[in-house]
Structures are given as C-alpha cells and as structure tokens.
Image (cartoon, rainbow, N blue to C red; front, side):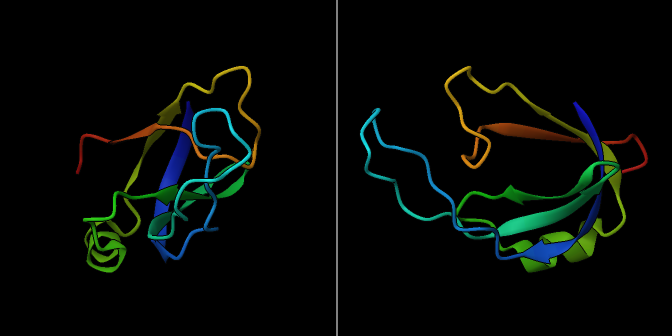
Length: 90
C-alpha cells in the first residue's frame, strides 16, 4: 500500500509486460494518472477507454491509497494490476 495524491494526467512510460512468458511485449500502455507519493511520483496506467485529462481534472489533489500485489517474478519496470482507493471525501 502506498499513500498517493493525484497530480494530473500523464502519458505514462509506455511499458508493457511479456506476453505468456515469452520475450515479446504486449501493446504499449500510455494513458495514465500522475500520482505523487512520499517515495516519489508514479504513473497509474488506465484502461484504454478512459481519457486521463478530464479524469485528472475531476480528481486533482484527491488523496488515497494505491494497492497492488506484485508476483515474485515481476520486474520493477513492468506494470502490475493496481487498485486506487480514494479517501472518503471523494
């Protein structure tokens, strides 16, 4: 778990994950929310159907918690499924 604050929209780092354990990567991921945490900034990659600009504008400065469960074989540069839970005031 990581405490975060929404800081805006982002283009993400266009990172992918290997497909089915191969050395090939899936499609690039790009739309994201920029999150600020005590340990630095993070990009929360969004599903393709979400536009990060209006979402970031609506949630600007909202605080919450970011949850994820990395698998042991995950490398830090890969993206993993994540849940953003906003505080009660949102």
